[in-house]
Length: 391
Ligand code: LLP
Image 1 (cartoon, rainbow, N blue to C red):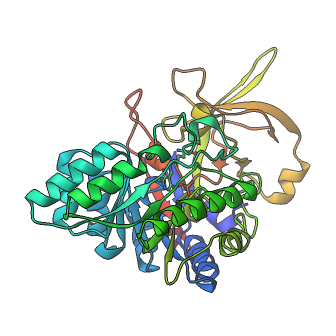
Image 2: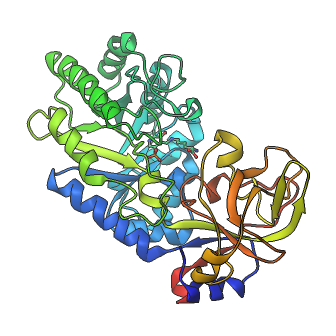
């Protein structure tokens, strides 16, 4: 819940806007890094979760690496100041132009997603007289037990190299001296809250690590991806992410050979808590079956509820906390202004009786919020407010 001063500052602003608490982001980064360092693990940030400039700058200043999934994300990471030696480029559909650009910028590595892509990278690097460092993204067929739209490590998913293709990859690595195999990469899904999934992942990584070792490849890097889930029901919880437990699992179950490095690429766990979408009630509609709160923010600003039926806590900000407790509570379907029935942030949400102009916060929206915004219905550009502007 936001304090009175913050709410008073919000009331001076045009809505909707994303509010980012960069101090909270710093605290989350410190916590993640502290727990990772206990085991000597390396953390990269998955830019796709949020590439707002100030958020990115704060993350870059923490000294962690960058996981990018497009040529533009690679360029953005460089522009913000991430160390090129800590930038990896992943994604199933890298274009020749994107590969060439990444080669020119001498990034740390490509996470390669298919045999064909490996051959293309090998050829382009050879032409440019470059060595492309590559990690093979293997699809380990581990069920992430999460929403099917954000599951990536099953045989039916488009991601990664199938296990029966690994010999073909080794043939290409021998054929192209321009390819240097530095590691293996895995990522089985997002918003994973069942820690057993990560145990199963470790077992698979160990098998593949052995497979390569037996064939004479002692790999420098084991990249186990991201996916660590957060508690969306408790936006002010400390912590909403249990980094300690997460890293301990990998420390316990992952078998490192010699001085092999373990890399993580976290997105949501690092940035979700620091962001909220702040909106105003435009209209209150009392129907026979339903009461609706119509907000000035919609699925165009935060798509997750419409796309994945994702839960975000909705809070009514107007009025003091004491007043709020005394207010009558009503159930509302909290919806946006967009001409789609899926434009709904929550059904039957219990809130105080609300009026036009009341402020509403949609919490835990720092990850996959702003970045997935769209212009549908020719909406305004996204606005932002940062905590250091209003405190
Ligand atoms: N590494 C790779 C290869 C990925 O594909 C992803 C996310 C990550 C790392 C970071 O995962 P995280 O730690 O954030 O779970 N838009 C969806 C989430 C899509 C995740 C895509 N890949 C959502 O709003 O839930």
